[in-house]
Each structure stands twice: as C-alpha cells, then as structure tokens.
Length: 264
Ligand SMILES: [Zn+2]
Image (cartoon, rainbow, N blue to C red; front, side, top):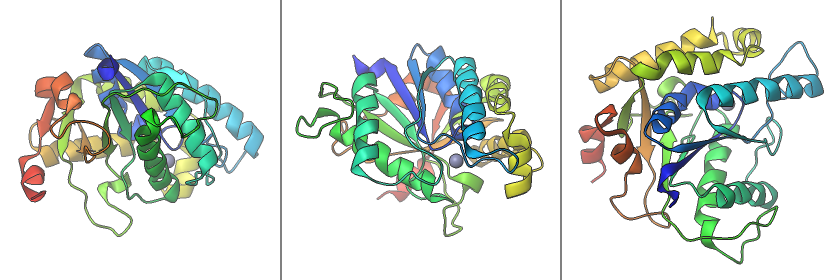
C-alpha cells in the first residue's frame, strides 16, 4: 500500500528543487503519489524584506514549485535557523509521515554545510522510525501504521560534507529527461536569485543547480544530468535489500558498485 507513495522532506523552500526534484518527477512518471514538505518557512532568505514578508513570498513560491512538480504541498512547521531536534518538531513531522505513509522518503544527508539541513535529516529519520509506535504522540494526533519505508539521502551542497570531504553517491538517478521541469520548479523561487548572489556568491542559482547535476552525471559516467542518493540503513524501516527507488526507476537508476563494495 505505501510503496507507491514518496515524500521529499527538505529544510528550506528550494532545497527539494536543488537536490531532489528530478527524482520526484521521475517517481511521478513511474506512478507514485508525491508529497512535498519544507520544514522551514524560508523567512531568513532575504536582505531586502523583513521576516513576515519573506515568509509569505516564499510560501507562494514553494506552493508554485510543488505544483510544477505535481507534488502535494504540506505546510512548513518552523522558521529558518530554528530547525532543531526537538520533541515539538518531531511530533509535527511524525504527524505528516503518519498521514502520508510513504514507501520512499527523500531527505538531506546526515552531514551537510549547514545545521538546518543536518537537523532536517535527523528529524526525518526519527519521524519515519516513529511511524508505527503508538506511545509516541504526534501533533496533531494521527493513527500509527506498520509498513516498510526506505530513506534516501540526497547529496550535500557542493557535494561535500561539512569537513570538506567529497561525498560519493550510492546511486545515480538519470534526471536528463526531466531537467527542464526541474529548472522550472527551481525558477519558481524567484526571490532567491538576489539572495543567493549576495549571501553565497552564486552567479545564478539556476546555473549552480545545473552545474551540480552535470557534475553528478560525469561522476556516474552514464547520464548527462543526475541526482545522487545514498540509501539509509534498513534497520527499523524496511527489509535488508529493499530499494524501492531502484525498483521504480529501473534503467534510470544506476547503482554505484564502487560505493556498494566500499560498504564492507
Ligand atoms: Zn537549505
């Protein structure tokens, strides 16, 4: 039942579009129901507007992006730089997971360049873990259910962890066919053009996304544009060999043998 449902859980509006949207689009094409959730509102992503205005602009942009991706939008649960590993946020996120019952969860990697991303990953993993635990209360209350779910971590920003180490994906997903749509979804975050230029020295956030997907394509050696994924350990979530992303995407999902061999 839950195997044909996927949810992308990002930290900020535009993270899903940067790192995960190509895979979301391909899962949609494969018949999956897709869900879209940014934990934070994006309220700090501006040097021109105050927090309230920025939050409202970014909510509109995120809704538009989710629509382009054909994904069901879920409201944010906190603000930028306030994504902490707290019982409150965990209860809110667990409610979404219990409602959606995803067979595939796409989220940030365990180490990334900023803590909002890292904490989003931690919260997503535990919310998934709590899906069938009746003694953990979600907010709002949602019925628990026991089913298999598999978690995949996207690439960190710059393809490096916080200690500058290059991160190699366990799987490359061929996003070439959906690249224009992915670009369109990212471009829906118009307010971020100026902000990312000023704050992070990106000439254009669209170009930055394009460069990253081309680099991942080169890394995998098979596809022009790619997104990279690492599958979470199965314990507490699914069977040892469950890999629903590979099963759903077929030839568009290249398992990185070098990575698999390195796992021991
Ligand atoms: Zn982010």
